[in-house]
Length: 173
Picture 1 (tube, helix red, strand yellow):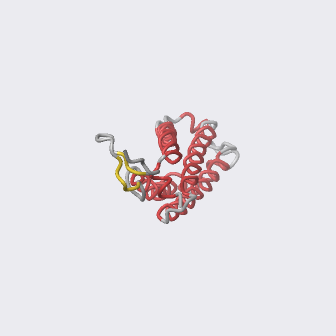
Picture 2 (cartoon, helix red, strand yellow):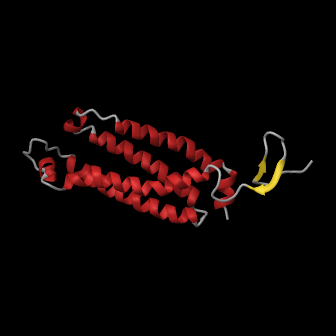
Picture 3 (tube, helix red, strand yellow):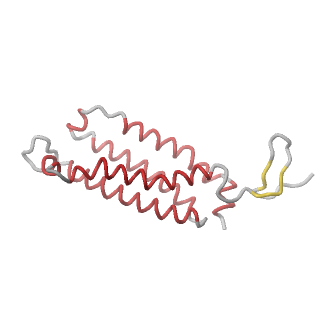
């Protein structure tokens, strides 16, 4: 009986091991690649549509000037945190995109950091926003859904990046 080499493909139906290694952007890594390509696009769109309008057209003044009906002391730090954080995540995802397709050894660690940092950012942002009465009074189903989606992503992709032979063979050189 032939011993399996590390990272060889094992056919569960026949019980045989093929000699080819699980390596390269294939299998489940294709989904990761699609996500890494889409992430900066969706983050930039969210920044442009949802956050940047708060800095124009008098909105900033209505939210951040004491005496204004919608004023709350958390508006300015929250909005600045959202712009800064999202901009950093866009930059991080672009760097990750380049390193991913260069198959750099650092990629699995960076993906895990990206996923956990993104989850932490969304949770912190949500709880800070909920301290603002105007935000708390508005029905918002999208943010809890976004938190759940990010938590599920972490639960799926972190173990994959820690245990996958394809990940080790693709980024382990």
